[in-house]
Image (cartoon, rainbow, N blue to C red; front, side, top):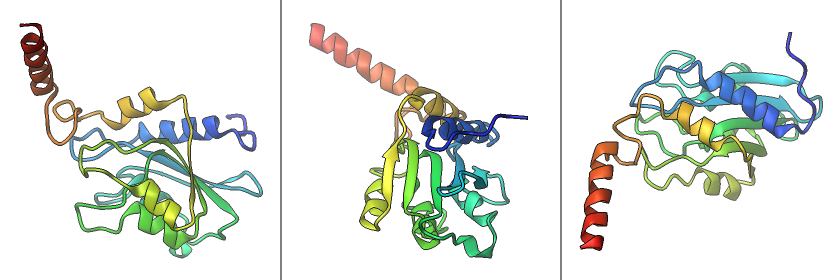
Length: 182
């Protein structure tokens, strides 16, 4: 049995979310993300989720809230969300974004491990939209490299953003360096 997480140990809750993200399938069409919803008053875990845990092209935050039942609503002062990656503000699939779901649920505080890279949606402004909606967004430092390594599994040809392969980016960098040295 694991030890309970101390109240306010944001790194420990982020590590828990990271462990959940590892359960997500590694695919080039999504990030592997984990999310944990915690009661701010009792320090108990209310729900958790990870990318594609439930049927369909589902996101971690979406699954976490769906598993709550009752429409995914929680008392605003009651819950804080830990998610390994900044929640999406746009879904290419046409589904409701994670930001919409968080705002609708009444969550007032979100802890994120990393901001969303520009792979699927350029300039994700999920953090800004949440903040405009009255949600405090807090970065939890220290796990960025590990979170991105897990999140980007299956993206080997897309890691540099917008479909630019690592090989193409490396070739462009080498050409730029060669021309600068000439």
